[in-house]
Image (cartoon, rainbow, N blue to C red; front, side, top):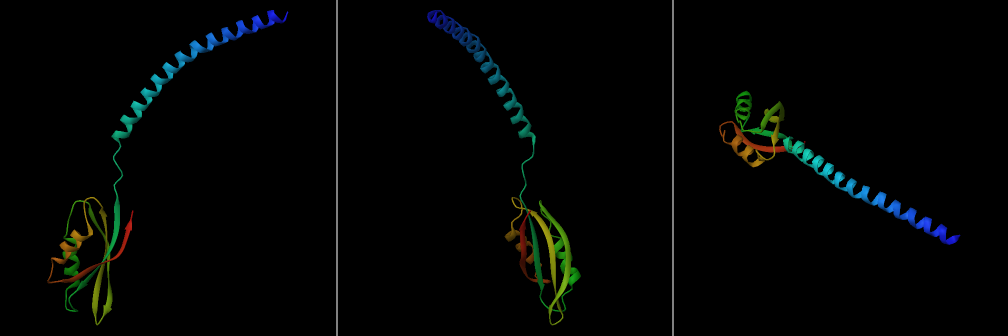
Length: 141
């Protein structure tokens, strides 16, 4: 009686192995095909998205030569500097001392296109109005 039971169990286990074994191989092939298809669609979708652009917010202190320097003209000269990836923002004048007003101006730059050295160089080219340029604040966006 135990021999018959063992034989039944062996046949059942063989049937289960055959059933699940063959289905599993087919499922693996199907799953692999579906996975590859999805990965291909994902890669195509991701390649269409634009990359992240690194930007920085810079606060510049622009110092005039003396109290007789036309600060409106000085600001106009600073804002005349145009580059790809440079956007000028708000500005204000504040007193430094001895009736000299310093220009503080905000700008946003794309890090790959505009460097701070180049920006300072371009601004200080206006030697008649601008003595120096300092970076008061530099924040990554």
